[in-house]
Image 1 (cartoon, rainbow, N blue to C red):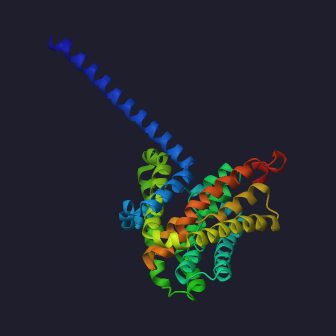
Image 2: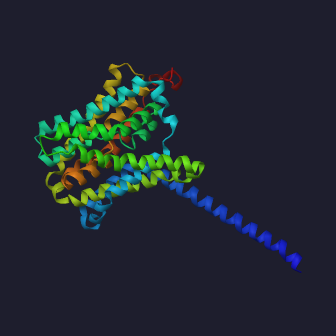
Image 3: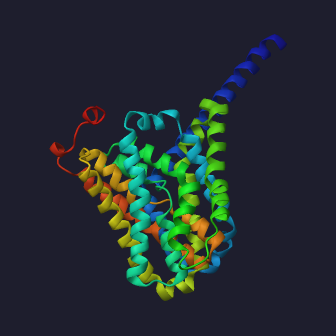
Length: 346
């Protein structure tokens, strides 16, 4: 009796174990599908919750203390996905990557400063506009470059290099351009960016190296985590500055739209001047025009005021909409204008 029962128990255990594994894999596939859907509809979620935070600020005001940890989570996710191959483009086409990095850190800060002068912006808003202009490339710019049929390797390399240079270049440019409006501490901002950007990225890279293939499940849900984090940051900023946005939101939005548009145009024009292939011009336009607005919001909240964070919050809403529209336009360009990937890498 005992002998006949033992195999049955083993069979039941195996069936139970197989069922658990199947359910786990099914749940992970469903979560990955949800993550892809949320990532593909990023702009809509940011816009929806920004409106809700404006209409019901008290419901979101408590998120303000979460801005820094949320940005750290986004940067940790970036570290999980960074690979040595992402920097191979730097070795293959160093001058093109350098062109993209220089264009990004010259065009966006320069346009921000000019817009502040033209519109005679109040000090806190002016500093906020310059701050977002001095941030590295946006976390969603690579996705937009892929959707646009751009040179993805170039886009990833520019985004990675601008992010790694941010601790030095971002506070330097903000100090140089924004000190006329408000006092700027280079060292304080330098340490903040190290903690907000570099430390989480390094921890993410270490986790990827130590865990190897086991982080693959985490990577699949990263778009969901990133979207939720950025949405919460935007909600926190909008809720904290609701009254000021109601007072001067249209002016700030106009400046943000112009800033982003000139970034796209001048980025694309730079590629044209240097005779880059079409796919690389697309990537350059998107990498120059899209900013890490989450970092801008976190720095503004930590070093200036809630109002200084508003340009970053509105930039986050707008550049995801404009980036999606531009990538759709780029994607629909006639095939004969699109140089093949094999030609690009020669």
